Length: 137
Image (cartoon, rainbow, N blue to C red; front, side, top):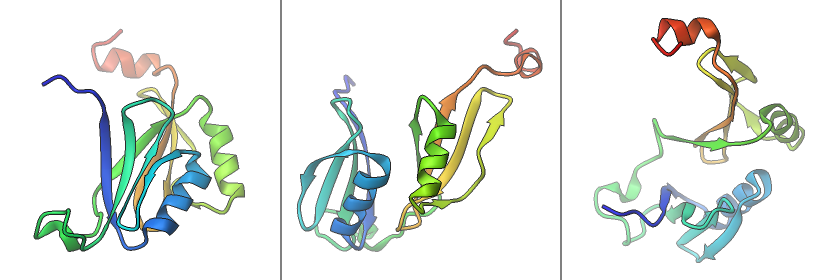
């Protein structure tokens, strides 16, 4: 399979409210906005985050009414600490505090207005101990 892009889609009740939240807080560009579907771009062609109206006929049964549970997306950023402070200042629900992981991530989780989990990630060097313990040093 030769991919030309990648996207995720989450079922939500309010397309307009969800689209506005993601545009404002995650600074994505709206590429499509209908009353039952929207898609936002990260700034890289072919990478989209989309939302479909829960119950719409475009979604196969029995998935039409399901809630987003156990799912999340991750956004790679240049400065997770700066994004943490910005999002906290905007009143976004912070799920976890900013943390440096030994495996090479500085990150934190936020939750959108639908309860969807978003991991904000900055790549940092893994610890030498972690690299050695995993046969990578």
